[in-house]
Image 1 (cartoon, rainbow, N blue to C red):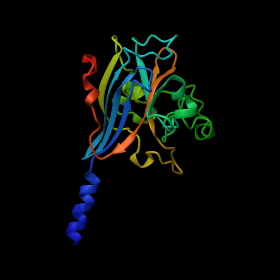
Image 2: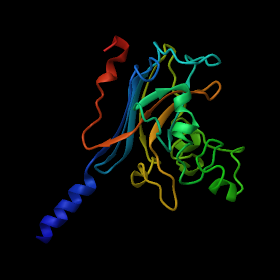
Image 3: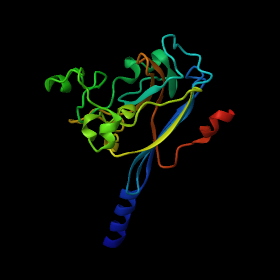
Image 4: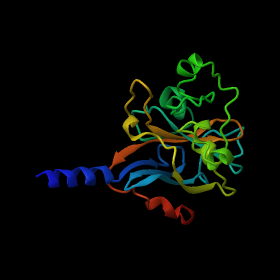
Length: 222
């Protein structure tokens, strides 16, 4: 019995969990794609994404989408009518700020007005950059600041794709569950790098099976 229980605990500890977001063009003003983050089996968290903005019809008047995008894990999802959205429905009232349990404290941190403020951190001198992060200086970045950790998404044809192994990923125990030391994380948001405006976003859904990545052939329209 003890051997069986031990084997069960090991299997449970090694089980892979997937957090999946689908960006549906019907609810996201023509944006289409997916974001997948997985944990387990003795590896760092891994995430991958494909995002097609070639048919995006949302507001982007001061944004050159072709240049680059930034993207982050945000703390909440409060769009009751859909699991993806665009523009105003990706705003602070619906997705709040960046997930930041280590209090790296950019101006967009969910904790900027309370926990960061209590440490005298205002967001004016947020030091996160991809070079420092790659050298192992993880704590300079918010755990939810994906583009800070790995660089902006580049896509000259409005098609963006990447995959990364993340040693400083959101903590699974905080998935849609805040505690005394950290806010929850719930959604992914894509921003225009030019002006920081929110273009598209989606709810992250936990599941035991790999995310449906059927949108991988976005260039071909499939």
